[in-house]
Length: 251
Image 1 (spheres, rainbow, N blue to C red):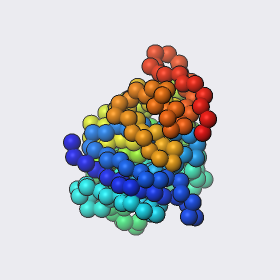
Image 2 (cartoon, rainbow, N blue to C red; image 1 turned 120 degrees about the horizontal axis):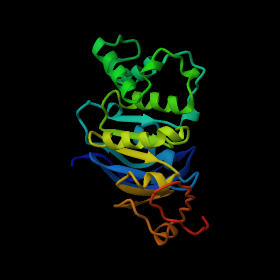
Image 3 (cartoon, rainbow, N blue to C red; image 1 turned 90 degrees about the horizontal axis):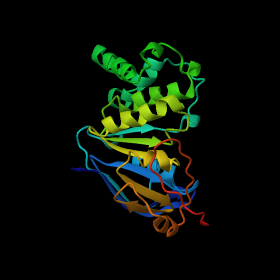
Image 4 (cartoon, rainbow, N blue to C red; image 1 turned 90 degrees about the vertical axis):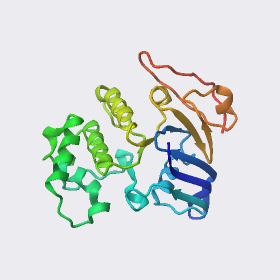
């Protein structure tokens, strides 16, 4: 499978303070990577570096995908829902279509084919009936589905999700990850999450981020591996979810 993104010796942060140091990772077309680590360890910063929202202090971020012509069109992004202003007066269908702005421009009119594609996505996620509602009227789980549609409407090569289960209702959580499994046949996926018990059932590999990045080429992590770079994880699971319970270790 072809390489999509390559990060080489990347260090980044804010106001001169380093949050990520010497990050090296290659992301390939069939990857499904779970990003775990402590709060403040740099997980969201890593996503922002890949998105180009933060310029590295050193190192390089290189996109190998030339299908869209520019890197911003190659990546779909689902941010943490608590970072989104639900008071903004916009309908569900318009939110989904806004995922095409980088292609079409801010004031472009959307074609009938594009609108049909947006409606199909809403239908696949079970929220077609909400297409004309204002996003401020939606529950957290419904809003999550809307923004997933927005993230994938441009058919990106890489989909990145930051704590996607924060506002997903329990009923939808399993369906949500099953949807991601299907999408993984068409695109690489990176999921940032504290819920190791759930994501380890679905992801193929895991990267632990705590200033540095430690990559595990499987979805199984031992206590010794986590302890070696101070990555405390808390797991709460229900049902038949395979998991590992780890002892507390200090930063």
